[in-house]
Amino acid sequence: MDNRSIAQSVAQLARISVGDGHVCGLTPAQWNTLRFFARANRFSRTVSAFAEFHATTRGTASQTVKGLVSEGYLTRSRSDLDGRSVRFDLTDKARSALSHDPLDVLSEAIGKLPPDARNQLQTSIKRLTEEVAHSRGKPSFGSCRFCCHLACALRKSGGEPSYACDLLGQPLAANDLDDLCVNFETAKSNPTARSRQDGAIS
Amino acid sequence: MDNRSIAQSVAQLARISVGDGHVCGLTPAQWNTLRFFARANRFSRTVSAFAEFHATTRGTASQTVKGLVSEGYLTRSRSDLDGRSVRFDLTDKARSALSHDPLDVLSEAIGKLPPDARNQLQTSIKRLTEEVAHSRGKPSFGSCRFCCHLACALRKSGGEPSYACDLLGQPLAANDLDDLCVNFETAKSNPTARSRQDGAIS
DNA sequence: CAGGTATAGTATCGATTCGAAACTAATTCC
DNA sequence: GGAATTAGTTTCGAATCGATACTATACCTG
Image 1 (cartoon, chains in turn cyan, red, purple, brown):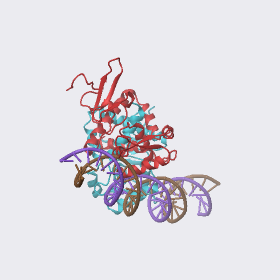
Image 2 (tube, rainbow over the protein chains, first blue to last red):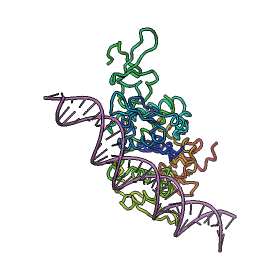
Image 3 (tube, each protein chain N blue to C red):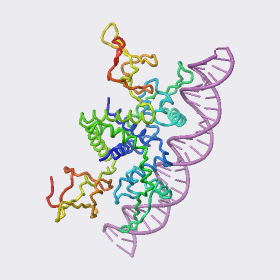
Image 4 (cartoon, chains in turn blue, brown, red, purple):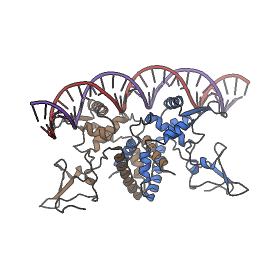
């Protein structure tokens, strides 16, 4: 079977997984939006970041977000660092809606794969996403854990390391590390946190 | 990373691969339609089969197909076996358009994967598609080669085997075997053609 | 600090898409 | 022969989305 058939199968899988939408009164576009804001870190929960992620325009993204705010799924709050910027956060209503996400049928199917196939799938999907995003000139939206901008310093006192984003100069909590970020850039050769003290690598 | 993240990555990969569409004057829906009619066998190149494949209604599918016919990408011909049925075939114009398919960026990315990862990806995607299609109550659209309705008989004269579809009672050419079929049902345990003479297996 | 430019977000318009429902015609089943 | 089914089409209204124009804030350069 050739590559084209596999590519079409991937597209087909995504289409039937996302489903007709309109589950729980939410449209497919709204589901996608909620999923994004559920996984994005606090620097990326903006209209612009979502527009880039969803490969659409800011105008369209703004419309979708506005609808979700008016229906009580997102809260809107201006940034105090940048007067232009607005951050959107999930409400409890959104979180409870996400527990009935139609995409969960795919998540569950993935859970039934043998562990090694599941890992292989994950790395292949990640590679393909980076490859395609690169040839389309789009950011690939990874998590801080694998980002070249992640800085890690050990606290003097004990084991607990502290993290920060080199690019934005902002601290990161340990459970922020797996969230999506617009500013993601893949780290060259270090899959884990780069330490600030141990000098440059490669 | 949990299954949900992987599921979302698959959806994301598909979205950015399909692209904004509107390449070569064709919309995303039209691209999908052409891709389907390029891969479907002669029993499945109908509005109904495409509607099922694309997880949409016959009405919507009919409109998309109508547009492609009027623009010269598909030809329309009534079936002589069933007076209700209409078959659509790709024109040369469509075939040449498909050589600029925007989905090709994904095909090429898949081609760059190491061979074992590529094979693993293919089988995982196939399993996931069947799983998800099953829980959504939709057909999974495989090829005759892996279908339980494929019948294979050896010609007396020599090596050339001949194939047929048990369900429809129609002969199949050797190069029909990899096309998509609405009537696909996965064969239990025989990944290759089942022979008529060698009795039932398992 | 003034002026130009870039960026974040919003609003509006028109084209496309899509689902639902009504409808025609051919087939199958009892 | 008549009811139910199936293939395909048409129409209508809602939702989506891209393009464009617009406001407000931030940055940059002299």
